[in-house]
Length: 71
Image 1 (spheres, one colour):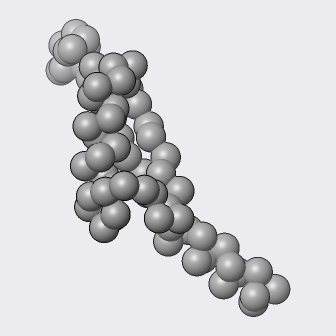
Image 2: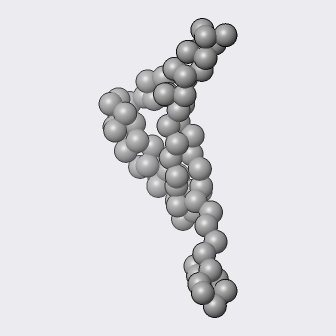
């Protein structure tokens, strides 16, 4: 049981979560730029080096005090 927990903990440390604005989500040039930036910050601009990079597209719905939607 302890070995399994250690293995899972090690995997969790390799998970990278990246939130991407909706405006870039389906734009190849923007996604390439974001990915390059993330890879550079991880220390290897040419590859993911064993990291599990997970992209989440920003989806926020914000309402003001008058319950009006704010884009």
